[in-house]
Amino acid sequence: MGVAISELVPSSEVSLDSLAGKIIAIDAMNMLYQFVTTIRQQDGTPLKDSKGNITSHLTGLFARTTRLMQKGIRLVFVFDGKMPELKAKERERREKLKEEAHAALQESVAAGDIAGMKKFAGRTARVTSQMIEESKELLDALGIPYLVAPSEGEAQAGFMVKQGDCDYVASQDSDCLIYDSPAMIKNLSLSNRRKKINALTYKAVLPEAITLEETLSTLGINLDQLRALAMLIGTDFNIGGIKGLGPKKGLKLVKEFGDDFKALFAEVKWDDHFEVSWQDVFDTIKNMPTTTEYSLSWKDVDADALKRLLVEEHDFSKARVDSAIEEIEKAKKKSQQTSLGRFFG
Image (cartoon, rainbow, N blue to C red):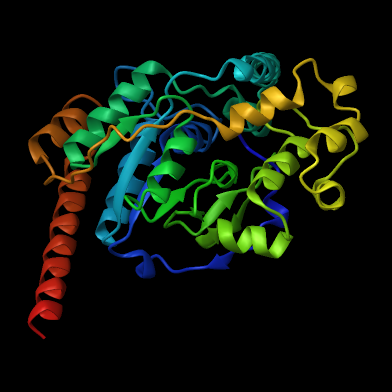
């Protein structure tokens, strides 16, 4: 969803080594979209195999997951299920932006403008059903569990943390907090850098741990008020939020009106900004469907399946795949030895 409250949310930097042994639920669509948007050639075109199939998603997913596995981190991927009805307008908005980006890309191509091609190509990116299925096939080969959420993947991931089955949700958005996730991790990457928004350069980043408890305590509000704050600033269910209202002013209003949300949204003239009622948006967020029908188990890497998918079908380097498998096995043995040492020590 991309709730714009990040500047208000307290966080603390953590090392990847400190996450060893932790179970982290990944918002799959969020991560795959990052890969297809940013993993591209100099002219902005996505990576492709010799058959012309896009491989940016597989390249990113393979690199990210295997390196995190080598750090002793256990991953679970959660894919989006049925899209909430109120999200249809956001989908229409995104499609319009992609069409505009595609037109700008064509102009850049015609002009031979490499910088423009790089800039606009990423904005045309889509995660297709084929990419999703290939990603699941890769996860199967790596022995990483995944599930499809009833609706929003981030809500299900947050629910799994709340249930105690995972330690964190990994996402660049703060959405999982309004879905009542106790903890999340941002910037879960080994590159220690991320592309700047609307720019061709990168900035240094480190993983950051965020907890719902500290967020609510620092802001001085409760969970329902956090949801109301997110709505004032804007969610996928009320795009753009209330015009002219930023996070700090929004927080001040939320505190002023307390739990009287009817009065709060009347004050900001919600109905002048949106066709959908504030109550429908609030209820959609608060009652996002989740499920307990999942089973998490991690299996050994299926080297043959991995090579079949990556090397034979998509032209990945066999040496690269073999090296990743070897490093995962080393990390696994080291983890087992450490566990035994603690047990007998």
